[in-house]
Length: 77
Image 1 (cartoon, rainbow, N blue to C red):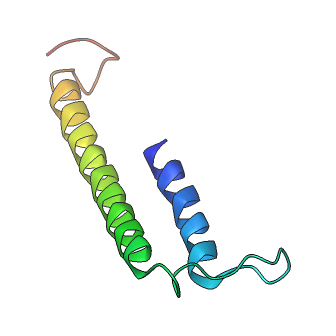
Image 2: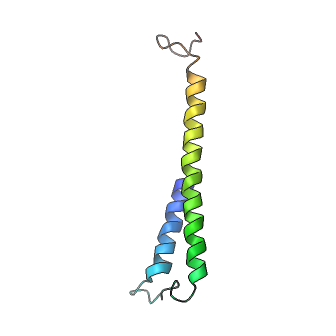
Image 3: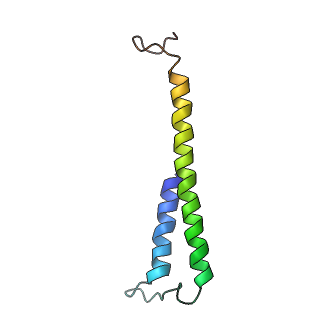
């Protein structure tokens, strides 16, 4: 969910950076430089949070499933 939200925000920020000629949307970054800098930082923090969450989830699942026997299904060692 976090990855999907960040990807949608990235697409919206690409429109802010380049504009959309067919929809007559102008470029925002040429007028609001601080806005684009803050959006870039927020997207970077969002993707770092996603990666950290994935690592923590992997470590949690590994520490949980290492207690189970590899030969029989859902039986503790």
